[in-house]
Length: 346
Image (cartoon, rainbow, N blue to C red; front, top):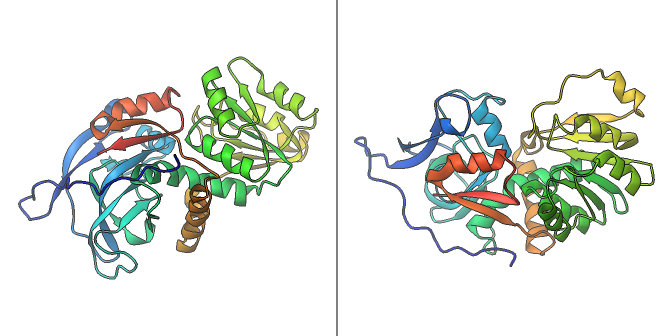
């Protein structure tokens, strides 16, 4: 089915601290490193200040950017929380908050790190009202990944009906949403995956040409599929392992859109290579830039809600972990042993 309707969550806010503020369990890390640096701690929740909202979480999304921040690739002031997105119910609001009330169902699709928690205080301008047809788990699994797909295929490189594109990691959380959305737009998708099982999953979600990169040369397959022409755009979240090959898949004046570094950052290269390979375009994007304003955030979310509610994009939740098993979740994600979206359940 399209969405999972969840009942209102039971109270998880813990006994008050001496000052009277409630306590909550949250994942924290005091040094960068592997999954072992993540610790579950009891922390005091501040009262919501002006423009802020206290949200009790029902589901928390896990994303690859979380591993970059934990490992130090994207440095954060330490100690720090982790996690960008979560869905739940408003418990309290600060002054000057408009558009939200206690009891509202909401989702935060991109916020400051700290979503790996039973509850947290966030800025109201980062929250979105959750349509009643979309459950908490579905919301937490779709917002960051879905808005990433929205800006990639509608704004960074507006994909057009009849085009054929290359998408790496086609069976991941972003990949499965992208395959479906591109399919809905009439775009053919060549998608790289790591196994036969992931190839079947990607195909079931709209990938026209799954390519198992562990068994096939994806550059040769792209040239074969396109009759030697190459593709106008490559969407690459893998990074180091695919960068050079991605450039070789492009048609003249094609665009390489790098939006992640799952295998590490690409090596520095001479920009003259872009000319030698056909006057290519290269961009390194982030979701934060594309939803920096309230208008952009709402516009991106509206487009995502629309394709989900109309059944054009279905959200696959491939795995769930209790909040306390966050280390195991990160190990599975980095080992590429996940499919679709992953959740932590407080």
